[in-house]
Image (cartoon, rainbow, N blue to C red; front, side, top):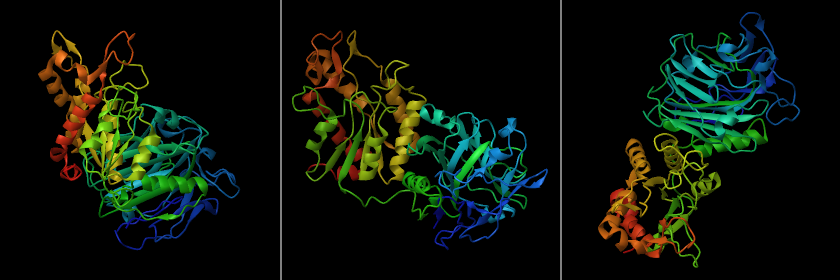
Length: 505
């Protein structure tokens, strides 16, 4: 079993062995030129030195650590370094002075911690590194607006498209980071997280790296923090509560989002958090209502008040389910894959439903420049991958639902403005082995068979706003929503055998 201790570098190499960390260091104890190990299997000091001058102190001032309390210190790379990365001058290094073979061969691992940059992140600055001269091993470095993980020479960047990039560019502010790597998989196996003291960690990006388990290091491989072992790629700023978790036998070293959140919360409140014993990559679904499903999406899915002429298919779906099946409908009007609230998503994760249905596309397709809009081939896909990854890590089975067709006709034929999003979702489903219910194609068949006039009763048309410039052919009436819910229910068996057990008999 992997063991981890917030505030330490912590590694175990065998599942089920002594849960103490293989190596562990707190930046709050030491001689000034070294950081003493605590509760470690290998009792070797983390030594601070400048390659050109020898021993040097890297402890910042008392209260300079994450908590800001007296007695809380940080590893302060800004004390001897005037730049960072390839543009910075050589500086001091915090180095594990034992050959890296002790931590070779990790099948999965997670690096986490807090950074307080003294200048904006630049290219190549090391946060945690453990490589040999042949570039075997792993390292986490910075790049403008991004974190970069390299495993066995293969690099994966976490370029942010929204507030993540802004957080990574902050200076003189503590920013939480974590990156997990699962070497048992070849795709979607690198997950980057970002947060602050007031913003819980969220997934910054999900990427792929097929490097496999960490290649065994030769005798020159050395673990270092805040710089490489030669002192030529320094991070400019302070680091605190750095942690490295790993397993050499399975995927449990790639911590789940919930486990990372526990580490984050522990570090915020105290420099040394409680021991966390990660479980498997998927948390067993033993909490909450055991026969429940969740829905996330837009106005074509959500619930409406009784007096409204509008209905979402999620509002009607319970009519097709067994009486004891609970539906958690977190869909809301106007939302896209980019703007779906984190609080609503965390509510679903905490409820641990059996399945979560994910339908976005209508608002993603809004004009470029609008807050909710996404590009079908890039960030829309990334957002879907994030939902899929987080759901699975919480033990929830994701089901993708392509956006229903708008009832728009031109010269007697249905228009296809949502096709790029439906196709992109289908591609993500194939790529991630996620079931897809193609509501876009199925509603197109319904509208084409009935024709423009015959399908009039399915959408609200002008009944919502008689002064509207265009008829509303996106939102559904009770009749239209019921047909969509029927299509969804009829697709359960082919999507997942477990879904069929939830249908009414």
